[in-house]
Image (cartoon, rainbow, N blue to C red; front, side):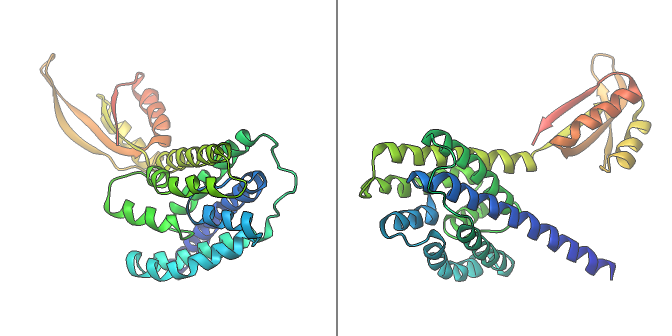
Length: 275
């Protein structure tokens, strides 16, 4: 029973964060991109160009493009990814439909609108990608490449979506200025994706040199809930043997561990390696 409750809580938490990411992404498009007539990358950009040409809502064309990609996600990424992809496509379609595109731009300046839209879109994309979800289109390409190659999500988006934005120049109202704003949106989005995703995943290796290794190790285990390893080390200058504490922790948790070391030993004595 407890195991089922934990799984249910996990699913609810994942659904919440995925939904939040989708809502942010939908807001970025409808409030900051579409009112100014420029496009982003991927299938969202293609859908935006169709909207400018035919006034077909972005939500409908985006949904149509992505139906077939559910099958691709099922084959390449597995059942769990495919289910989350269906949820992502349906959720983003919903937000693109219900969030109105204002007749007067939310931010009048195109450059500021592109920057703000990129920040919000990047935060949204990273939020749902971290939970293994996708909204189809270029997201599937990003997840596949990231699965087999050691490249960041933002870099893949930057390369993959460039051609879509460049093609917006050939729209009836297309100009180099609008293409440039599209690239601003895409570049800021890519940076925000890496900032959010890598900030969440970044860890540090800590080596703590102290004579009070017992107290510090116990405090790290019980107060910070991190495992530690002790090993023998030799100070080559003093030729004295001592215990060294080794652990891996999240970047955001490192400062509290620093404070614990100082509170017990009186001074900072550690080395940090980022991983």
